[in-house]
Structure formats: structure tokens, C-alpha cells
Length: 250
Length: 250
DNA sequence: CGAGAGGTTGAGGACCATCAACGCCAGTGG
DNA sequence: CCACTGGCGTTGATGGTCCTCAACCTCTCG
Image (cartoon, rainbow over all chains, first blue to last red):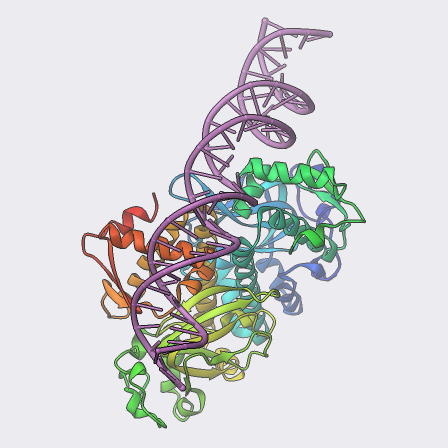
């Protein structure tokens, strides 16, 4: 059985205690950013189990620490994490929120050390590919090398786009785009694009968008009062008649 | 003669008309971001000439266009360029200023298409490595593949750091850091860290830092009146007793 | 000389940060 | 069961930072 292609279940791996939070949310391997990396491995018998291990990350736990040597690449399998760059003053910038299927830790290819860290916002699961394995395999299988470049390049393009968002758009445009971006990413993973969880705090949205938590809260409230979204504890619904797209680049 | 190691001169390549602007400013190959890529090639006889070509880019000319298929990677050999992401509304975000020794076009590894474009701010020269060559070589020489990943990863880390700068720092902190960053990069290339050209317009500094040209102008004037810098047409001097570093993170 | 691009400087105001108070909810312990 | 507590979210008042609009200056080039 090819577990890289068949969407496997959480029960397929040893679990000390199956947690509801991580259930029904894991992404199919075929939708994973790392899939092109994992897939060829399944063809090379005996390698798969050695290369791909899984790991649980409890809410609040750090997957890897800023400044730590890059030992592995990660792919989020289930849950929700944040990738953040801690500042010297205790503040931090949240580079990105990580959804199931997203890759993490790629920025460490620069120095071999993680410049950012990843912290779980809820109980999560990740697939782990040891770095030296990835490198060896990238040498042996040319398409893997290309896929790895593509993955890092995608992160780069995304980061540049985020910078553009930060320089050229108002607070409400940023929040609107943030919601639409999440919506799109959930849709790409086969989930509802109109209703999804929002497990991060307002503070963290602010740290991602360059705003204060109060501003984020006000703007979300404003969107709700206009009938564009519906907020509830830890989740949001984007109403069909959403003017969000309109608001996002005006 | 190994032109990848010996700092070669502009006269060594056919030049329709040697332009003073590009002279005395080309970086030594050993200081180039692409050097680890170029260097191994010189060991493989016969490949070098085919892989590494040079190209002149006149002031105002576009090295590659946003949306164009990625045909090559580039390394700046002499001159000064900007890498920018044009917005739909005619505005744009300047991702980065490119100095001699910097790599350009790496973000195209995401889709095979350039998301950003590079435009010369003054007459420049670039080294060009066709993409398919780079890929073939990366397959053949493992260290090349790793170097390529490292290059892209470095761009990624830099971009994330820039995002952090945009979200968490005031206008004057941004300008101060911008100057210090340029200073450091010139120093790394063997030039003066205290006096260097500033060939971009105020408008363009603003597009890089998320500020208006008026704000940039005011802050530079302010720095000058405090005795921290000395401005002259197209260049700047950072005075030894610079409080810039202090201002950059306060 | 005139025209135009880029830079500087000023006045006024929008936008968002700051500071502060309050509400809601979950968890805790009496 | 209920008060207490602390984290998070909301909302209001106020002020600072930076944008906007505008005038003027300098330099370059035809």
C-alpha cells in the first residue's frame, strides 16, 4: 500500500492518545506541498519508512527553535501553526500561518540554521524529512532537487508578495486580503472556502499584518457590521455576498 | 586563464563602447553570490564559456520582465539595479536593490516565470546562466544543487527580514537600517562602508521601505542636520560618529 | 533661456497606535 | 454553586506619525 498517495488516517500511526483537535483535518498527501518530494520515495522501496517520520506537536509547543541547526524539513499534516521571527525586544513578526499541506523550515537552507521558529496554535501533526536525507535524495533523483528548489522559490515569491502587501495597502485591505488568502488556501485543500477556523489571536493576526490587535479587532467588527463576515469564537464565515474582494485592493 | 577566479576586467569582454559608469565598480568573481555556482564549472573544461555569458544593461533598461518565462539566472557584475514587483494600479514595490555580486531572478524557481522584474538604475553588466544549464549542472554536480538551494534560501531569509522591518519599525528606523544595510553590503564587497553612491531616487527608496518620497527626503535631511550623514548628489557619506546604528532599532 | 525631472520644505489632516475601561468566557478553588 | 481570576476581545478617547497636497528650489538638458 502506498501511503504517500492514499490519504492515510491518523490512526495509521502510533498515537499515545488520539486527540479530537487533530482529527478530520489532516490533508491528503496528494495535496501536500511536500508530496512531490515524498512521492518518488515510495518508488524506492525501503526508503519510505526511513525518510518520512511523523511527529505530534501539542498546542503551544515549538516544532523548532530560531537559531537551531536545521536538522529536518517539515510538512504540516494536521493542525495549525505559526512561523515567526522573534525580535530582540520580545516582539515578533509572524512570517506565515501554516496549514495542513504547508512546508516549514525551508528558510534554513540559507545558513543551515533556522532564522524563524514554528509554534503550534493547536494540537498538530507534522511529517519530518531529515535534511541530510533530503539532500542525498535530491542528488540521486534529479526531479527531487528541482522540486526542492521550487518549494523554496515558492516561499520566496510568497514572502515578497507579503512585503508588497505591507507597504502598499491600508489596514482594512490587509485584513481583507488575509481572510481571502486563508479562504483560498482552505479551498485548495478541499475544505470550505466560506467558513473556517481562525485559531490565532487578534494579536497574532496583527503581528502578521503589521497592525495592532485593537486595529485588527475594529476592522473585523466593522466587516461584520457591514454584513461581509460573521465572527464566532475561533472561526469566521465569509458571507457569499462578500465585498471582501472589493475591499481588498481599493 | 580562469576567469571565474581571477578578478577579470570589463575590458576582457567585447564592449561596443566602454562606459565610465560601469568601470572600477565590478565585483571580483570571488565575492559574487554566484561564485560557488560558477567556480566548479571552470573545473569542467569546455563548459565554462558556454554557461557563463555576459550582458550589458543600459540605465533604465529591463533585464527581465515580470511575467516572462525564466530563461536564466543572473549575477550582477557591475552597476546597480532594482528588483521590483509592479502592482496592478501602476504602483510597485521594490523588493531589493541589486549590487555587484548579487543574484537576480531566483524567485522564478517557484513557477518558472519571473514574478518580479529587474531594471538597471545605471549602466550595468550581468553574468547570465541559462536556467536549463544550471539545472543540468545541478544534477551533475551535487554541491551545485546545494549552492543553488542556499542562494534561494538566502533570498528567502532576507525577504522575511525585510517584512519584519516593514511591520515593526518606524520610518526613521527603516531609513537608518536601509543606509546601514547598503553600507554593510558595500563593505562586504571591499568598498568603503562610509561613503557610497545612492543612485536611486527618493521615490524608489520609499517604494522599498513602504514610505512616501517626502518622508524619505525629510528623514534624510533630518539625519544630515543632526550630523549623522552627509548628502550629495547621488551619493551619501555616513559620518564616523554615526548614531545611525542607534537610531536603527530604537 | 525654458522645460521638466527630481528634491526639499511646509501646512493640514487621515489613519492607525496608544492608553484605558469594560465584557465575555474558561478554569479554579472555596 | 458561585466568586474570583486571568486571558482575550471589544470599544472609546486621544494623540502621534506619516500621508497628502502644494509651493518652491536645484540641476540637467535641449
